[in-house]
Image 1 (tube, one colour):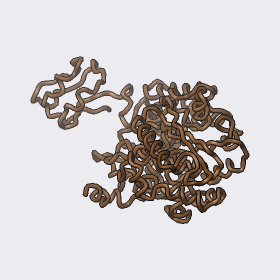
Image 2 (cartoon, helix red, strand yellow):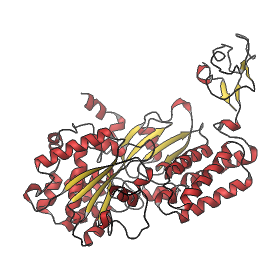
Image 3 (tube, one colour):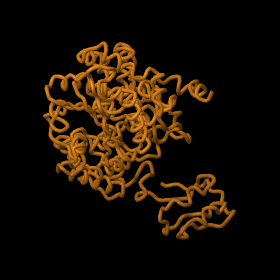
Image 4 (tube, helix red, strand yellow):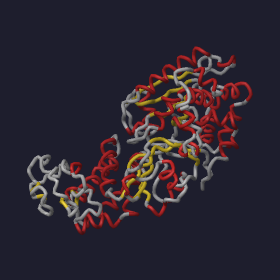
Length: 499
């Protein structure tokens, strides 16, 4: 009854669940429940009725593109690896979900692990690979446990291992735990980590489809991409390609992880082309607290900020690129009018600097210089020269970094400067933060809403609040204030604010 009630909600009825089809509906630790939902039917169909080239053609015709962020055609990638002759080939699942606040892959692996195993076996048949690896961060213990159970069950039942379904095709999968380095989400760094090397990106070409894991042709797709494959085989390429709309023709569904200033945080799976407004208001329940929408940040730390004028834009790989953002793995952080866009850019640069592998100078040094400039801006110490240097450094890092992490690291800065330049100018020229979010540039005050209740006074650790109880207008905050914000939640009328 509870599941049916959930299905009947507006949020669930308007979703189109493909990658998340079984999540929450089956016991992920019982292979029988996956089989009851047509599990491993696609693998049986592929091995007994289709040639490898036919499988690749179906995946190509479906328009399925990489859901990990790159958006490259999955069928085309598979065809490259299939065309390369080798005594061994590999299938790798990228489950190194590093974007802050994102848990799309985790939800699939914890809720429906067999769909990924089945898809990897299908991909192995399509390109002629007999071995696969799932690269997953060690911080996902539940997902790892359920993958291990699923692997054991699949082998016992004969849907993985040698001579699957009595055919000549054999496929085995190993789990490789990563240590949480963000750069290992980049495919060449990921492969190096599997090989036991330091997780650093390598120049391309050669691409992994030609020379990948252990020097052999390798296909790398992320969890969500693989999770779509069995459903495409079962329902047909036309079915998947009929879902949604997009400028570049890359159709189907996309899982988004909603966070930030939004009523209903969590995962939603919607057709390509769904507007940002619908994702935020219909699925996310809108912005709480009566605040106004300011921007939506998509694509994780490497993404961009989308202003209100694009609220009705349908999300798609090309649509987001055209306005200076990106799909990424599907993170969508909603920002309201209390957010400072300069500080938002600084926040994401802080993460990127910390996660840079340090191999190339543009990323290692350039992002650090960007962060220093942004920090000066939020502290009211920046100059006009800093503003010009910020623009120059962004272009330099994008053009000269070795891998995608460095190439896209300046995106939050570029997009916020494009759409919110007045905030940068205010920080530099007026030494003011329009949103009042940069504490170094703002002063904590008690406004005329104050009812003289005296509740704020006892919590101040430095005795910075002066006033006489029940005497309106007598309360003020003096220069002792250390901006610890302890007083703000104590005020019942929200009279303590930054200005």
